[in-house]
Amino acid sequence: MSLRVQFWGTRGSIPSPGPKTVRYGGNTPCVELRTTEGWLIILDAGTGMRELGRSLLSRANGAPIKGDIFLTHAHWDHIQGIPFFGPIFQRGNHFTIWGSQTLETSIDRIVRDQMNPVVFPVTFEELDATIDFSAIDERKQVRQGFEVSAYPVRHPGGALGYRFSEVGSGRSLVYISDNELGSGGKYETPIGWRSKLVDFVKGAKVLVHDTTYTAEEYDHYRGWGHSTYDDALSLAIEAGVEQLVLFHHKPERSDEELDQRVEQCREIVKERGINMEIEAAAEGMTLTV
Ligand SMILES: [Zn+2]
Ligand SMILES: [Zn+2]
Image (tube, rainbow, N blue to C red; front, side):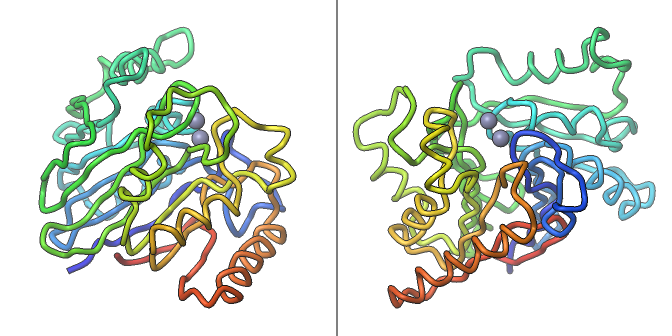
């Protein structure tokens, strides 16, 4: 019994195709999870969602496609793939889009407005698939054979981190795409936020976390809502995860530089005698939880 994970988009902020990003990929966040029973879970709807849609249509071979889509928040890089997700144009398909109810504008409104005729040729109302919206908070929900809970993280306008596990498996994946672990920014961070975050991540098999910046870069981007490699590594160590997956790569980060960052993180855990696997998320990469 295991959750299967596949990365379709790993880049932060804006699609970044080109010769320097071929291996880790240029599409913005989209991750596919599958339960043992085959239920489809999609994390974020960045531009990686377009290829995921093509893959789902060919795998389904005409059969209806159903699943849950969990959005961390509604910045462009996390919703831009929705209008290009092929399965929403096919009758009989059914998706539930989950998001925070604390955003200033509801997820429902944002997704619909993204397909306003001023900016997109097909309106949301014209879509053939059935699409529902649902709010999620810190309470654990049990869905089609899996459990999910959310935790509010530090990001401009608000964002959620998610924790998933198959019912009865005891192994979890935590997905935190955009989160400022550093001290910058003006957030309404409740007292005890950090220790509650550690509890939220505690004992997960896999932590996928925002690693947009180097420590040097971070000084220029305090308050932009993202973390450094060092900060994500500290959280992973503190929470005792088995594997850390570096995610939401800075648009300018080349494949070679990402290789170096992974090596540096591996050196740090090795020096400290900690047994933790470290990878950088790459388009097409798969793992099991
Ligand atoms: Zn983002
Ligand atoms: Zn964001």
